[in-house]
Image: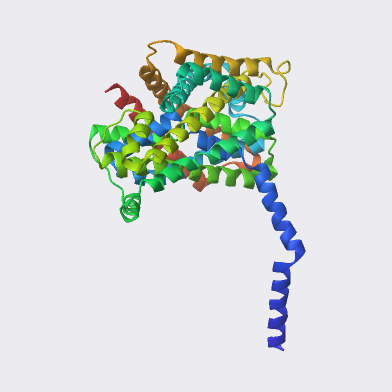
Amino acid sequence: MADKVSRSSFRTVLRNTFSLRSWKKSWRSLGLFFALIGPGIITSNVDNDAGGITTYSLAGAEYGLSLLWTLIPITLLLIIIQEMCARMGVVSGKGLSDLIRERFGARVTFCLMLFLFLANLGNTIAEFAGVAASMEIFGVSKYISVPVSALFVWWLVVKGSYKSVEKAFLVACLFYLSYIISGFMGRPDWGQVGTALITPEFRMEPGFITMTVGVVGTTIAPWMQFYLQSSVVDKGLKSGDYKYARLDVILGSFAVNIVAFFIIMLCAVTLFQNGIRIESARDAALALEPLAGKYCSWLFAFGLLNASLFAASILPLSTAYTICEAFGWESSVDRKFTEAPQFYGMYFLMIFLGAGIILLPDVPLIPIMYYSQVINGVLLPFVLVFMLVLVNDRRIMGNYTNGRILNIISWLTVLILIFLSLAMVVTSFV
């Protein structure tokens, strides 16, 4: 009798597992996931911009594989911060700057927006510099590449809807595979790479400390939190979509650091091992040709172009979202220009200034990029503290506030990031 019951239970399990209804439910869940992802993956990948790629290239070229291990804790920190933003977006239905204005007042919000505008402008200038540098490798003058790219990113957002813009950005994410392919073309010793990844190494040297702070700082920027939450709201995600938004953030956090891993590793096994010094991602692309072949060099340069163009689209968009939300103006790519003039005006202003400054002769790009990172470093701790206060406000979050354990982890994360941000600022002036 027991044997019959056992066989009957086994048949029931098989029938439920392979039933048409079960498969349909699985496919619906998968389809729903792909319909709802986007904000987390896009936001994280944009962080691998011209500045990020330069930082990772320098880390590998100057210190070899020594900094690979930092990508593991960085991934965890990024997931924690981004998850809170996504959760606030789906539960409140409001952007981060909107919530900050309501909770902390107009004066605090105005000061925050001013610093964010200056930091994002500096970063946007750096992105168009990346476009110019990458296209010069292919023999195209910046006086052609920069205006064309500026016109393209303006057209993409102004003439598109949220869905079409998001699809274009998700396609751009796929081109980061060029760094993974070029990494394999560098023919690394995978045993040595694996050992470096799981073996923490730290040197009490000013240069090493600064580079460590730079690798962490370039992965978590203030603008990311504002853009992620705004895009979650603009996409129309609700609290019922939270599990998909969370998975989106986790996938994005892993994707961005996998690309960072291959950039650091490639530059370590080629440039560092051959004693070649570089100052930018463009130098890295050019230096790779005699070491790993011209195709590897071209892939690296193409990755820089894609990353710069991608970020040159997102950073102005993030600024427009953030500032318009802060002052209560309409902010959505699904609105027409007449419905959201401030939003499109801010987006155009950021592109015009970012591209225009690059075309000026003898522009001091290094100081611009330098001071924008300093502003980022000063701004990040404030943004994170605002976020933690908001995510624990039951009037906003209801039952979706942080639990005790998550709060402990989150505040420790914030303290670590505050320390690293302050260290970045201090070491910048030393």
